[in-house]
Length: 114
Length: 114
Image (cartoon, rainbow over all chains, first blue to last red; front, side, top):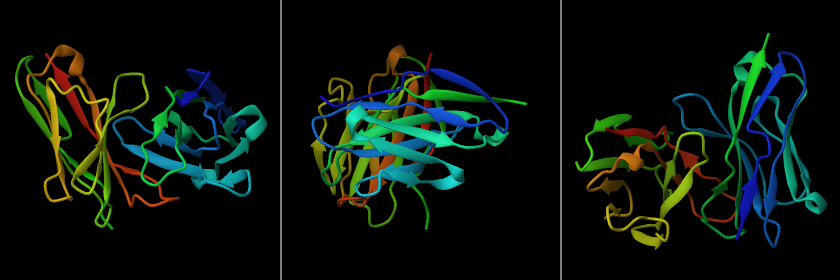
């Protein structure tokens, strides 16, 4: 069965510092990969997605992620974190089929210190 | 374009009482999902609809949970009777249901069972 692991439950980063959130997946083939962000009391907002092609994908708010097939990873990065980036971040996978549901990791809480 | 609309945003009920959540997906989205998000966890799929047909309800606790999407547009998720362990955020999402399309999430309904 497919699964997603986010090894870091909570990360604290200084404002202006770089960020990397880890995500590993378990799946027999290349799945669709996603990163969502959830601010308190809000729904999930898509940051970026990977379906195929270039393994480095750019998203909104200055985020990017790199798909590494050999490591079954899809880590999220941002070169300079802003205080407004403090939120919960979820990595998710979906089967390479139309309309299939997302399988989420447990999330990483990002705190930003000044 | 309006996003996925859910109501109510918050609901507090006593255990053993019934409760219902409503979701209106994005216009033209054939696929509708209900997820449950427990505190500190990622969302987990309860049920997925393709138009009015429930195509994946394997994770729906059918003894107390029910869902419907009668005209293939909006949907209702019901719990009867509610238990303390049902306290969670219930998220609705929709997608076009075709390859390479993403799911869009509503803001969710936070249910507290006391």
